[in-house]
Structures are given as C-alpha cells and as structure tokens.
Length: 499
Length: 90
Image (cartoon, rainbow over all chains, first blue to last red; front, side):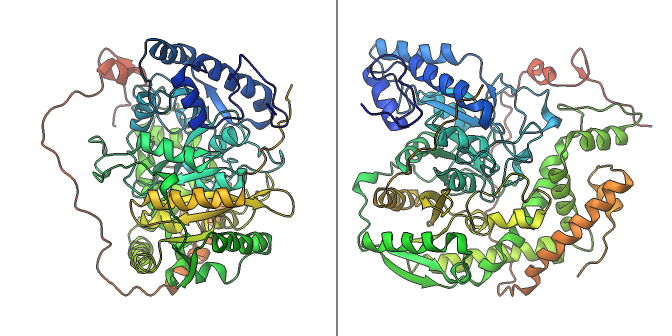
C-alpha cells in the first residue's frame, strides 16, 4: 500500500486514517476492520505531528477515548453505530459541545463552558462520530483569514506564511492537513467556502434552514448555517445527511424532507450551468486561467453553459456587510458581563457593560458592531439597513429568475489564492472583498459548495463554487462530485513535522 | 457620502468604550468602509415591498424543561445561592 508523502503508517492493518475519507473510515469501523480508538489515536498522532506549526486546534476534547471505545463496543455487540461510525471530527469553536469550553475565538468567552450540545453535534454523535476538538476561528465568525482569533493565527498547510482563510480556518486546516477527515464550520458570508477554497478542500454551506442553528453562537441569524468541510464532496454529503432536518429548537429550521444525495446516480450530461456575467467581466488575473479550464472541464462533462445577468451581484459585499453587521450588533449585545463571559471590574452597571465588552472584544468585532449599530441608528436606518434589505430581496428575485434558466450557477469561490498573513489585516475593505463571490448565496439562503479546481501558478489551491436552488443540495453535490472526478484530487500538502 | 460620523454616540449605543486614539482610528475605519458601502446607492430597487421573510413560527406557550439552574450558575461571574450578583443601579 503506498502512502501519501509525509504520512507514517500507524497501528494495525487498516489502522491508518490519514489517507482515508470519512466514508471509508465509517465503513471500516462498521465492519470491525478498523477500531474507532485506533482512528482517534491516529488523528491525535497527526495533530501532535503537525499542529505545532499549523495551530488549527484551540482545544482537544476530554473524553474522546471513552466515546471511541463506546463506538467499538457497539460494533463488537453486533450493533451499527451509524453512518459516521468512528469518524474523528473537528468542531469549530462557535459550535457548542456539552461540558467543553466554547470560546468563539474570543477573550470575552474565555471562561465559558457550554452546558449543552448543539443540535448538529448531537446528530453527529448519534451517527457514531468521535469529536476530537474545537478549531480556531476569526472571533465570532468575523473575518476571512483566522487572523482575528484572540488566541493565535492559524497557518495554511500549503504555505505556512499564508492564511488558511476564515472564519472557519482551523476546520479547513484540520481537514486539509489530513489530521481529521471531517470538520464542522459555520458560514455567514463565506466562512466555510472561502477557507475550504484556500486550503484545497470541499466545503458546503447548506440552504438556510437545512441544518439547525441551535448551539451555533449567532453572528447573523438570517445568514448563519453550520456546514461540513472534507477532502471529498461525498464526505460533505455524508455529514450533511447526518445533521440536516427540522429541529423544534430552531424555528428557522426547515421541515423540508432530508434525502440522500445519491451522488452515484447523478447524471451531469446535458445539465445547464449559469455563469453570472457581472462576476466574470473582470476576473482577477490570478484565477483567470483556472476559471477557463474549470469551464472546459464542465463542458467536457457534457454541461451546457448559459450566461445570466444578476445586476445586484455588484452590490453583494456592501449589502452583506450592512445586514450581517446589523444583525451582529444585536446578537452580540448579550455579551455584557452579566450572566456569563468576561466581567470587568467596574464602579457602575453601565461601566460594567462597556468595560467588559471593550476589554473582551477584538478590533474587528468592535468595528463590525459599530458598523451595524450605525446602520440601524436613527437617521441612517432607511438609507443603510432599509436599502440593504431591499437589495437582498432584489438579489433573490434575480437569482430565482437566473436559476429558472439553469440547474446551478458556477462562480469562482474566491478572487485569488491564499494571501499572506498580515497582508490584508489592516485593510478592512480589501479583506471584505474576499467574500465577493460567496455573499450572494448567503444573502439569498441558497445552497453553495466550494470544490477544489486545481492550483494557481504559485502552487496554491483554487476553487469553484456551485450554487443551487433552495434545498437542491442533491444537485449541488452531484455537480460537485462530477467536477471533482473530472478535475482529479489535489495531492495533499506536505506535512512538516513540528517540534 | 459621509465625511464624519458621531463615533462617540454610536459607541455609546453599542456599549463600547475606547480611548480617544482608538475612537479616531475606529471612525476613520468606519468612514472608509461606509465609502465602499455607498455602492448600495447605485442599486435600483424595483420592488418597494419588504423583503420576503416568512411569518414567525410559533409554538404553544407550554412550560418545558430548560437548563438546570446549577448549570446556568456555573457560568455566572458572581453568584449567591440561586442568585446572580450584579451592580446595583444607582
């Protein structure tokens, strides 16, 4: 058996997890060919070997071995632990895991321990998964680089001097560096898709309402979704199926039926793909060649390409940054030092509020709270929040019309490959423009998948995004899997051993 | 196009406090961001009706099991028996 470069065989026959997908790990555990405790040990060994340099995890969960042993005991007793049996999974630091700290990459929650599981976590556990730890993120989901974590930045395994993207940067790296086969992230304006793109892995933002937000710390409640990151589209489909479905504890979760994506049955030949004219009229040079060859791949698969006009696409970043920050200003009002989180020394109630918050929040979080507060404030509400709401509604109308003429829309996922750590952190607008292609699906609640599309001239991953109709994840994933087969997998990045 | 915003007022609304230097930096950041956001002015919205949010999903107002009190208190900064201690309002 040949090993990917940089990987050491570990454990008994079939004990190696690093080269395996979640689908393969679960299949091996369910038949008893692989023990969940060995899969976990392998993940831990990979984390020990690589994460000193990458810094994708903020904590490892206590009790993971006991949990893995329970999964093995179920198999030994002749029971089926579920479709994610024994799969080591990393969880973003804003998704609640009972009795573990939940810090959202922020100092303001550094002493907070979650008393409950997020629904998405509960469902993964019910499917047999083994939770390994929490991954690093931009504070409260606000960022596109993981540089806004209050703890430390995470590094891109393809080039340690570059960002992994954000806000789910830690999750993207944990998967990209093959520490775990599967990770959960959250996506509000692109925070699963953009880091997936920069790290060369697949990442899905489900239709708004497809996955319960209960236990996901709210940033923009009309935009947030929990989403999977994995090395294959099939793994993201497996994870989605385990998590999706109505939850009485999230009134925005949909009662639409959850069906299996059935990727092997998807026929791509003859399907129609829409290209948004406004997005491709001035593509950055760094992604142009790869974009053209991606379109060629889709043509080779038998797709018909149509051009669609989405005039409001030019304003998606502006629209998003008004709506998301407005919602965030309301959602982050709960961090006031009263019931939980950091409480500052103070001499009055109002000082307690402002000191706790000012000491606890980082610069980007403050910027966004202020932007949102401004957008909602008297005298500006109509011109900002009101106008942005109308623009989002108009965007939805335009996209519904576009998607009546094609099955999915395809765009680049990001305007370029991973940028350098420190390059954009002092230029908020430039950083926000990382989301130029991803905010469209966020504002309209449409399902969107980022899938690796090859490499830039500097040897960094690039990605295309597939956007579908509401609850048409089967189509989006079907297109993604077919494209992935056509383009071929990226060779995993070399893993630097760390001291 | 905005050339200045009342950053102190916005900051107070948001219950944030900053040094004079930080406030100035935040103000210039915000002005730059708002300059970019002015691209929204070019969007012509045809439909003047409110965005299509679904009606709120309601449930019966039945008491249900919630978080056990001790778990809630475990995360509280300062407690006394079943109570949360907070500064008095003067």
